[in-house]
Image (cartoon, rainbow, N blue to C red; front, side, top):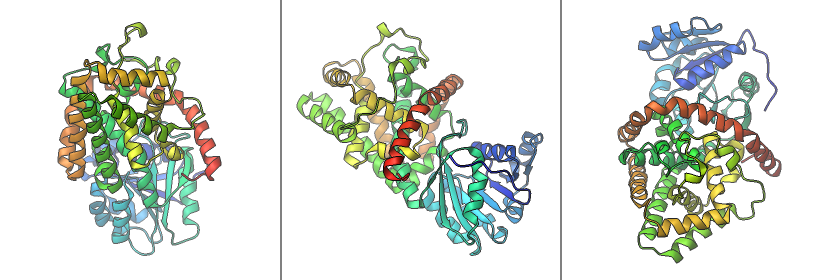
Length: 447
């Protein structure tokens, strides 16, 4: 985390796109004393004016031309699939010698749009807060991408502006950012999205069943609901527009399918070999303590089922995740320095299973010998393949439809899940920060 700088009265920050992240940025920057010029679509002008009427330093405009012409650092906070259109519209109005960046989760189309539509005198310095709008940014990774700097002071100004988030700065190129976000976010999201689709298809509210209660089941349920409580495009752009993400999501679906087939034919030898080989690749030689422990996880249950009544689980979603990492050559700990809270929870859930030999043995035995989860694993396999197909086909509409059905189904429990999810993140943050510090000291602070 860097030094927090005081706002400068002669510097204005523009935000084009006032979705949840745009609003969070506007509030944080304004609270730090910076002047914020902001806009969204014309039909949102009146509602935004009313929402921010009492917030000092935030000035709402009808469109991005007004924002671009008078702002020194302009942040485009719009969906990745719309970035070219929006920058093409407002980019030519950019103030002379200004700095422009974006907050999209996939930087390849963002940088391409900036290079295509912005004047040559403009510096391009993008950013990406690796957390959702409802997470306290303190200590969370904030990626800064200095793609083009027209003046030596441009990067220093952006650093001073963003220091008010009290986040941990990570400097990357656009290509590095996209590769690492694919490694840490894309497959993580696919796993939780597939769980939600499977539960919806089976007409199940998992917190009402003894089959999903306690321990890492709390992570699965709370984070799945947390993801579905957000807007679909937050995840769609990262998955569909990032080629590395497409490949990894397909591999996850393949891992789920292949492991499920081994379960069906009861090929104990091959199933066990594949699981243990993947586990050794990802977790072999780890000496640090577990990210997640029972005494922490049991505090965050939506079900309230006593520990003695809990049922074992085949954990196909976790087994397939580690197999996918192995097949893709990904060691997830390599990217802890710029990981999201959801990724840290998911990594914690996988290591909780794989680094406790007796628990992993029980999981393998249960997956092969007990059929009580067979129908659930079948639906999960269908769901994982369906999400992979939507991403591989580049179909935003199919992605949206797949997302909105579970979203509607689970909507009544979103408030509880968000509250518990935030508490869970806060509880393990200190431990993961210690791990990040150890990783950073070994590799010079770069992932």
